[in-house]
Length: 477
Image 1 (cartoon, rainbow, N blue to C red):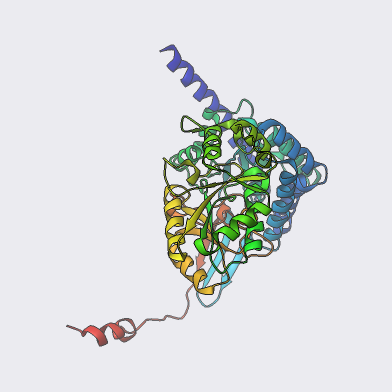
Image 2 (tube, helix red, strand yellow):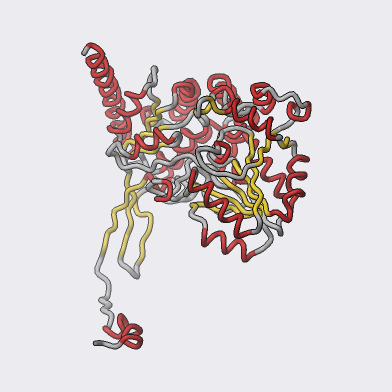
């Protein structure tokens, strides 16, 4: 009974804290409601500069690595700079204030309005880049945002907030447009934010996504991935191996878009394995695979000691004695099965690439479908090929929201300067993944629109136009 009272008290205290933050956020939104497009774009630039500014980027990357223990410093710096620049480029010159579109033919005028106070639950894998990215998009729509970091990512989020507030002060904007949950960050506060915010986005674990989607708040929650790339018989093997290496190892596989498995057609299998070995991959034998599995999972649960760690740390944890294994940049394990009894077939958050051999392209598609149906359906997959027919076929058959052809998955899925996807760190998997969107998160998700409809010349179709072809085939009876 005493414990129930304590839980109730904690929840009430958390709810009160969130209510005060929401009130501040709404007051800040009121102050910018009449901002012009130019002023709004300046807000976005301010947030972008707060994380991109030389010195800030490096400090945020250092704190993130120090406090979460996840990833690599250089890659975190690269990610923050690249994603921020790309997102700012995407938002540049886009209309998000007042009239954003007029169509004389339909008589429809679209007027953009805020969605309200945005709650943003962000993961420990990207405690600086993700909140900055989402804040830029939210402010583009004149919304306020409250960030709920993971406990380990709190220090990074707090430092980011300091940098953002410094920039907002420069332009005379209300600081409460961007807030971070106060410590201690806990489940009660995070759930309170989910329930009280006007609009919610959750990027991260399956449990958090599920909580967000069942919170009762309108949301765009996105879940984890388990990217699979197919290498067919027509692929440029050296190029494919290099791209998969880059994708597998970037930031020690902290992203939902890092390659987790590669499915290789049998006719090029040996050549591809050799090419991956030249990129620093070490192919484990069965005994080493067993040792690696024991180091990555304990009693079926992911061992945090090997999450997003350098390859040498994983080698030591697995007790791998081979010199080549200890000098590898990533590991490869051969697999034939899929599902809970084959943990390497799922998302690993480790520099471990699962390798499957396919008889032919049809078999490769079937294997990929099985992997994604087990874990990661709806998110992404890739194809390395020079066969246009294969591109069309996989596009028609694979239930994923993004399919990258001959690209580095980890840097292409979330937008790139050499593809047409918008920059983001949050990617929907559609109904396949139980998500409300299959898009890359963008500023458009943070806009309400009023459609003003005016009278246009009446156009009434004839019965012949509507049923003519049907009547020809089946008659009117």
